[in-house]
Each structure stands twice: as structure tokens, then as C-alpha cells.
Image (cartoon, rainbow, N blue to C red):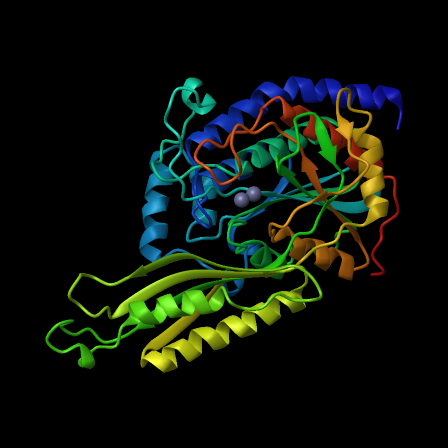
Length: 443
Ligand SMILES: [Zn+2]
Ligand SMILES: [Zn+2]
């Protein structure tokens, strides 16, 4: 790539940065959890359209029956009303209505070349944001306006970076080779949205695929071309049904869903480790019972399993199912188990990561890590990564460092907005470079 082109990318990125930060602050103030990102998705679709991207949104890019953990109709309807009142784009709001909050924008370069895709997740979390004056979003007036919902994983930054990439790419159209597809995905938290977009075909025909996460414990000014170690995971909602009775007068007539669930929780945490790699199990929530002198007739648990491979996760899951069902049998309770999220592990291709590393090193002040970042979280972009690799393409998951005042998924979480420009420049330079590479797919 010529030095002149590189300079233009850096200059254009700098020019786009104030708007990128404004977008991030707007999204931070109006956070939306998985499949309710109506305002967010409608605004993303509008912005991409205005920038000249060909945009698809809603049912066309989110397969209905492949979605997991979708909120109830009543919840979706309430979020629709709220989004409309809070400035959603009216045209695209109709398209993404009903839990179809995915958006895909595509731009075609002046010269032929491969198809390059990148995934940005857009959802927030059910967390009450810190309200004290030492929290930057409070100081700067963009703290969450929706109590109990917060962008505390940095996905507001991901959307802003994605739209920044779109803006710079649109300005570089004449220098682009191939096609670039930007995928804005709902419901990453809980691993619920990527599978439904993959099943709708959004990564079909992709030769090179990228995904990104901000923060992850890495400092501002650093970029990790590879994030490794994402665990395969399954998320379960478990409901036990028992029989209520007077705890003093006739305890023998009751069947306690609470005791059943409590015993299941302990049993789940006693599942053995696996010799082939790390595994996890967690009961993160347990609600049961209605009063002191009543045998509890209902219990609800949120459970997750993880493993460094899909096989290890399946091992933990099989044991978990046996424990959940066996405990129900032992206590004379009914059990209903719903899979509300699922993901696989993912591996980046070193050859593509090298291209990213070389281009990121051209961004002044950005330190490129020679070693992968290793995490034990989970991430459903792995479905896209795997699908692209199955087609003969290559995939990379990168980490963009950011100094965090508090960890991911906590009330005082925040990212440094100054890191966005580095990410945008590194991504655009990489996409321009990869455009000169041959298509990978055998098809
Ligand atoms: Zn998260
Ligand atoms: Zn995240």
C-alpha cells in the first residue's frame, strides 16, 4: 500500500472521530439488551444507508427459529414503544421489530477482489450503571437513561468503531478492492444472536472474516491480532415444579422445588473436571419459594456450562442434564430445561492475523502484541469464524486494548474513547490490504 493511501486513511479517521464518539455516547445513554436493540439497530441501518452502503436488516438477516433466549412478545412490544419515543429511525424500526435486530451493510470497491466481513456486537447488559460523579459517563452527561440496563461490556464502542470503519471506507471507495460486509449482531451476551445470523446466511461467500473486542484487560494503545481461548458454552434456564403444602401441618404432602433446586445446584458444581482441557459450570441465579411456612412449589435457575472444545462443553452439559433430571426424580418434582444460548470455541488463522499485525503497526502509537491474548470467556462470533473457515476462508478475532476503570460486566465499567481511532485505522488499513489478496473460497 502506498504511503499516500495510508496517510489518507489516518487523516480521514481523525476527521471521523468526533462523530464516532458522539455515536458511542448516544448508544451508551440508550442501552438495549439482546434482541431489543431496536433503537440501536435502526440507527445503525440509517447511518450505513446514508453512507452509501447496501443495507439489509431484520428477518432477512436474522433467522427466526434459530434465535435463542428471545424476550417475550410483551417485552418486545414495550421496547418497540420506547425505541420509537426515544428517536429510533422510523423506517428501519419497522424492519427490525419483534426481535430481529440484526443489520448488514455492504460496500463494493472499484476493483474486483475478495469478500471481507467484520462482526460488531451491539447489545447491552441488565446492570444498573454507577451514578456517582467519578464515573465519566455521569460527568459527561451520557450515563444510561434506562435504569438497570447498561453498556458494561463495551459494545457501544464496537458499534461506534464499526460505523467509523464504514465512514472511512465510504470515503475510500475508489481505493477499495472486493466487497466489504459489516455485520451488526444482536444478543452476543448469553451467546444468542450470531447463530441466527449465520443461519440466515450473512457470512456465506466470505473469504476473510474479522471480529473485535475492546478492553479485555489489555491497556490503551495496544492491539492483539489474536484473542484465543474462547470457550464453547451452553446456557440453560431451568424451572422446577413441586407441590406446596403447610410446612407445619402437613409437610409430607409437599414436594419442595426449592430443596430440589438447591441440591441440583450443589450437584452441578460437583461435576468433575476434564483431562482434555478447561471446563466450567455455574449456577448464577436461583429464585424459589414464596414464604417461610410454605413448601416451595417453584424454583428457577440460570445455569451455564463451558469447555475449551465443544466436546468438553458437551461432557459437562450431559452430566448437568443428568443431575437436573435426577434431582427432579428424587424429589418428586417436574423439571423444564430450556437451552437459551449456545456457542462453540474459535481459532484465528495466523496468516490473516499477520496481515492485521503488519497494518496495525503502521498506526502511530499503536503497540501490536506479538503474542495472542488468552481469555476464558465465551463469544458467539466463533460461529461466523468457523463457518467462514469451513468455506475455505480465514478468520481472525482481535482485541483492542483500553484502560478500564472497572472490569467488564460491572457498574463502573467504561472504555477510553481515544482508543477508537486506533482501532478504526488498523481495521481499514487491513481491509484495504486484504482486498489485494485472492479470494479464498473453493466455490
Ligand atoms: Zn460481555
Ligand atoms: Zn462483550
